[in-house]
Length: 146
Image 1 (cartoon, rainbow, N blue to C red):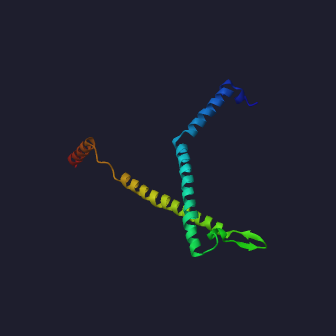
Image 2: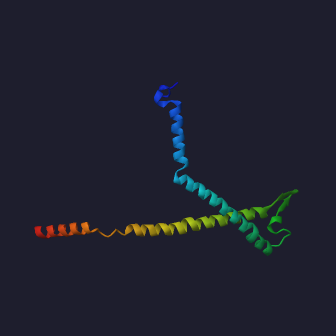
Image 3: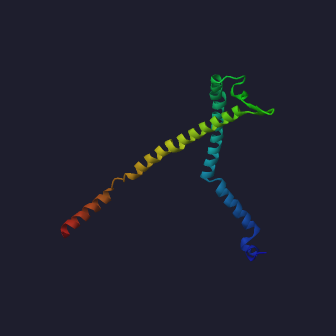
């Protein structure tokens, strides 16, 4: 056994408490909770996009290219084996819509917000009265010495 582990300072109780403390710090930090909320919202957003693709976009495509069940019936049959390319097409469109929405949100909206934050941060705050007085004193001293 390692001498450090035999030391009373590193007993099992201390390690368990330390582990629990570390876990609490990790699990209940704002970042982890924000991430969990983001995942739940992302799942809900994914369901909305699925519904949009499956119940609106693909049926409209099915109207343009008619079939018995719209895009669901689009398949190739090779040696008796069905290959449902219509379902794949639906999933590809689903992916493209999600990717487009994420692009618009992350690149455009968040990018504009960051630019505004940088503009606000670039403007220095107005000097305090103390700073103005110190500047005047400095200028007077420079004028006297010159």
